[in-house]
Image (tube, rainbow, N blue to C red):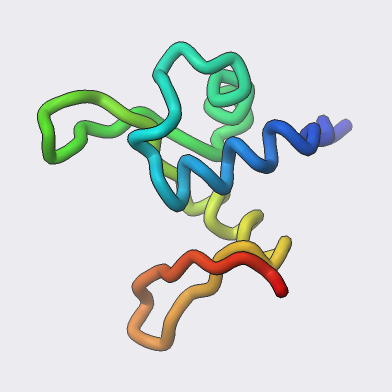
Length: 81
């Protein structure tokens, strides 16, 4: 059985993908996403630890229309309009 994400968890996933420094490591929504293997803790350039999206998380955002993969393989975030 697959667990469904709440709207808050989907929004948290998008924020982590777009601006990970805005989500605290203790955020309960991020912990749920981490258990679902949608995000992981990664070292930031500043030396702090922050969340980053996994390939599974990026694929979910792409399927929701919240992120696209450019032709060179790099990722670009965008809101659906």
